[in-house]
Length: 256
Image (cartoon, rainbow, N blue to C red; front, top):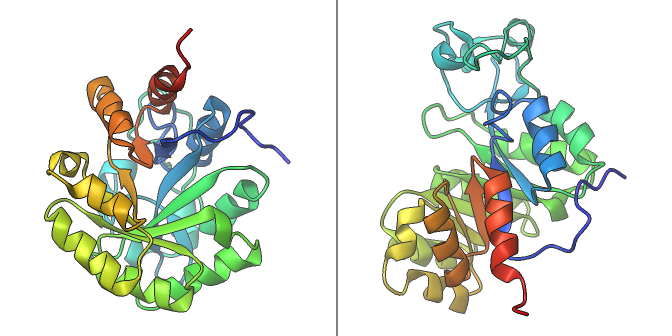
């Protein structure tokens, strides 16, 4: 097994946002492998679906930014998408393809990483995508290493209904106390707030009291990283996992 990590997991865990996207095109296999090699604890990725039902990894619904073509993924076949260059927007990158979830999981299964799968179904609904994701995860028996999240609260609740043993989290930008109340009501395991919510008085401590994991996005400032570590945040989702790991490891070193 290619573990990628050699030391025990230390809190907060560090998740590479769309992989090591400062080094390679985001949400591609080179970016995921690089995050693993850096020593990240986990990877955050974004999931959508083609018109012919293929689960594919890509952040944007429309491919204008990432591939230079004005078309939505939901209107493309997997064959059409697989012919595009996912490195279009990354200067100096060789051509690289948009990966499918299946391709990712076949690699991921041999690592010791955790993956946060964000379902991108707030703009386009992708009916029944939750059951399709669960089927893909179960082909590799990976429920204990997967976190599923979405800005679509109903989708997260549906995933939790389908798989009570799967870690499910609600993504949000504001109103953290409302989000916490909803998470408790529907039995969710975690909350993924924009990092500014960390500064709302009492929010993090209430989450901790109710055993709700808090995974912040997207934390790129060293100052914010250090503050989050002091607050006992569970996970930092960051574009710069190398920096986050360095700061995390310095913060937990015992004093001499």
